[in-house]
Length: 198
Ligand code: ADP
Ligand code: MG
Image (cartoon, rainbow, N blue to C red; front, side, top):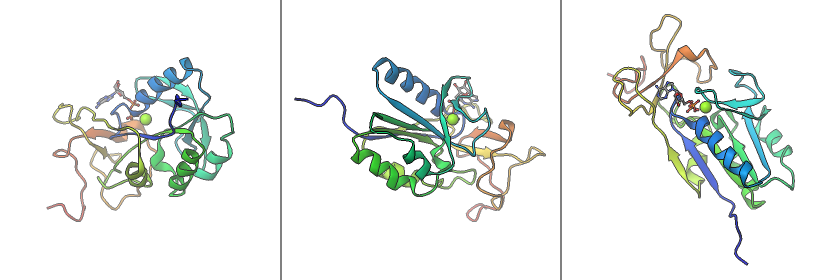
């Protein structure tokens, strides 16, 4: 008999405002119609919209379980779970890579969304590992650049309270007010103090 579902890892990535959470919510609606048992997780550090849901900037929402680390995520998966959805995967510890492998061994479909690069424009957390071992779909989304208005933004610009670009030396994780982040294209992405910047 042909199996209806194959375990696989799909990745949805791109900068802030590129539509990652929107895409997750769209897929969650399909999984619901298909009658699959889905567990949705986000990281408990991400309390921008209230913890117990994933939410897009266009206000799509879905109930989610906030977890502080990858082991807690695994603990909440049961033998009935068909699909695991993870939003803001870049906030998780490196252990998420091994845990995703374990979920795939258990024949669970895994879909992870997260920022591919941090505000410095460098690979973010566990995302490069997840991207490398994705055996399903890899979707790289773009946003509209805040400066040139082209739909080519691949970077997340962090701004300080004074509206100036945050320096390279700033901490990598800062779950701040939404107006402290913008989507920008490579040309308009600014990181003062970046080693390779002239
Ligand atoms: P992500 O999860 O990638 O941060 P969301 O799914 O939360 O993105 O939000 C995508 C929505 O954000 C878009 O549908 C649009 O309504 C809104 N939006 C705000 N600013 C931008 C921008 N610069 N480029 C594209 N969409 C934007
Ligand atoms: Mg999002």
